Length: 477
Ligand SMILES: [Zn+2]
Image 1 (cartoon, helix red, strand yellow):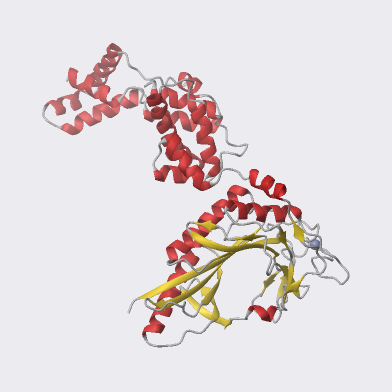
Image 2 (cartoon, rainbow, N blue to C red):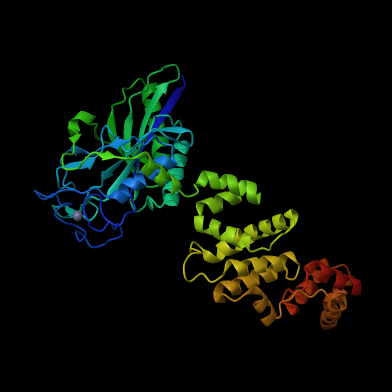
């Protein structure tokens, strides 16, 4: 019998706001000292009142609009009641039946809802002692939760969905969404059913997935585990499972609570939210170009390969730098010429410049190559004024000093030598200095020609094109 997996995702992302969700404490996920960004509100002291963070609401609405969600005119906050040491109030302010965003789609997967809530504190369990520690810096940090319909059918698709969402969150500036730092957390609901069965199988919720690899591997493991259980006619229990990265296995944590266990009720200390059409339109109008549109535009405008485009889309600042370089390549260029120079720019940015940057950004103060200078380098290569070896050398120098390429080439005497008689002179000189190699070549030793060519390239610091140098040597030999 064939089995079909069904996966739904619940993705939490910490929003990049200045302050927390319901108080004015700093929202700083990098804070190393415990319990410094706290106040009576986020510590749940009696008599304190929450005030909703407008920026957090706008950010979630913008995410919703970017995903094509419907933004209802009214929305409200609810209390989700449960006890846990990282939750000082004894309840979490979340959204139950009136979320900020409903519907929407990403990578052809329907989105159920996107809502806003607050994060909890962090627990630490030091080894060898009989107590745990709690840090409330994260308590009350605005958290977005996105829930998909159970429509994903493979681990690969689930991981791709999460990656694309992360990219969109970053483009919007809604969240840094770094999974390793816990700024984005994925839970996967996985079930398996026999092909002919219409109703979904019993679902298992896998938590603590803190990398895209874990998302992929944990889902793959669950599909296999559940399929094998069904094949041997074992029952699958509805439960929450954790992911053990070292063992590459999921493990049972606890049987799942039902929603009514949380005793959701409307948060009485916060008013109902209501939005005018114009407000929603304004938020929509502030959405920047998103990855999918950028892919399309880069394909149409610059005729780059899918692989090249993806690097520019994934590294937004590099993509923007590339576009600035292209805009500096010259005015009123013929389409073929512009196309050729655009391709050259992409090549040098994606291979040589990225190599020099090694993960650093082109936005920092340390980055010295202006788009004008980069475009000038590309023009010099395109005109044949410098070889690709010289271009690489000049680029390293530009990266280190910020000087413009023409100056570097002049200062270092790196101009391409194209004068035939000059090249012939150099070739003659090399042969007269290496008589043995010349003799050996005449006796049929091909390697000797390579040696002479190497000598010639060294003597000219690569300013002669290897083909022309080789021809000049052969003429004399
Ligand atoms: Zn606070």
